[in-house]
Image (cartoon, rainbow over all chains, first blue to last red; front, side, top):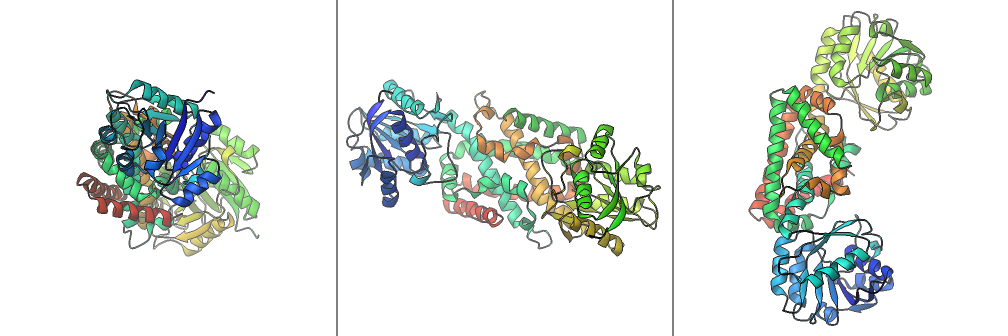
Amino acid sequence: MAAVIQRLTVIGTGLIGGSFALALREAGAVDHVIGVDADRANLERARALGIIDEMAFSPGDGVARADAVFIAVPVCSIVECVREIASAVPHGCIITDGGSVKAALVRECESLIPPGRSFIGGHPIAGTEHSGADAAFAALYRGKRCILTPSPTSDLQALETVSKLWRATGAVVSCMEAGHHDRIFAEISHLPHAVAYALVHAVGIADVEGENVLSYTAGGFRDFTRIASSDPVMWRDISLMNRDALLASLDGFSTSLNELRQRIASGDRDGLTAFFTIAKQFRDGII
Amino acid sequence: MAAVIQRLTVIGTGLIGGSFALALREAGAVDHVIGVDADRANLERARALGIIDEMAFSPGDGVARADAVFIAVPVCSIVECVREIASAVPHGCIITDGGSVKAALVRECESLIPPGRSFIGGHPIAGTEHSGADAAFAALYRGKRCILTPSPTSDLQALETVSKLWRATGAVVSCMEAGHHDRIFAEISHLPHAVAYALVHAVGIADVEGENVLSYTAGGFRDFTRIASSDPVMWRDISLMNRDALLASLDGFSTSLNELRQRIASGDRDGLTAFFTIAKQFRDGII
């Protein structure tokens, strides 16, 4: 394909940023990729693996000649990263990110960008349990969703360029309002993580005649609670960045849980069958 | 090996009962297996597959010459099954089961058995997502736990025989008090199922600006909620049969969840890091 842009700078050359660069190089969508990473060894690894053409040793240096910048650092560091590069990004440059919480982040990033530059929020729904440049691969985004969250003031040409880049990775791109994104992901991602952490916490501290209950767990429990093995610091940050939506989702969950508890407590056989059947139908509907 | 018993009757020749019979035949632990199943086609399939030697067309007929009876029907039907065979089991016969809830069930079954016969409760921690005679295989229990729940009045020789049979299937046998069993499984199995059903229920009915939130779910959500695809009727029965322990587990979970909610609501960064880290340590400890 014809290149979408010439020079791409990727800040954070790990799984997310590295796979983005690899996919775009493979598609011929970019001519030259500059990498920036706080972890020097990971940056050199990205260079050695052919993920990037060139290393830059500060975000400011890295973005100075970029047509587009993809920020793939931890979600809580994205605003700080934009603050750091804001004065260095050239006129016409487009900045986008891969953070999983959007509303407050997009608002702050937009306010930091000088006139003539654009910020377009993005969230690719893809990942693996691995991290770092070694985990990156060109097919990560193929057939996966990528959600862009433009605001009413977003530059449409910048939005189109970011969209073209993601489509070039093989992702299926859609747009939605940032707050709507955050409410959806509070339900389908942040709530399940909170519930999984709370469940493991509760079972872990449960005292059944002094026995270590966890020693009896089998595959089902391990599968169910796998997401409670995720990075605690990342989930602290996501919980706080999407606090309002997550609290609303937690309250909705508590309502459902209390309804179930009530039906168990009152021995409501029909009510329990109905509750479990409705839930199973929701679950089977998404397979 | 030398046979542990001569004649075994299996009531319910599906995955659990069929695999028990296959494993014991393969080990040479039984000489002759009689099968009983309310589903005639499944019973004939068990015969055709060599799981059983002989079909019986009523539980009473099936147990009349048995040295041991293994009841592998749905957990809510076990007491009824024991009631039905109680007058037909010969003197010296041992009855055991594979139900996943034990205390009330064992109490009732013991009260139904005439003098000179024994009931020993059991719970093999094994299974697959398949069911029926076709799903049965001899290695199902190999290396898996089987918990026996004898009571203070249990016949020790009967307990030893049931234990030998399970060991012959390859299972690792341990004993515990039935109420203790139920409290442990409330925590590690029944609570996670209730939570998964409640989670899918809550997300399924969540109204995020009228959008079907479930359409955004990816692999993580599907994996996390897989157990909410289980049989609603079976989980209704388990919830009610283990009501008290499950309610206590639900309350412990709600306490943990509320603690997490409070830390999110108050923006308690250190408290959140600690909560998620403790949970992750519990989770990683069971891998």
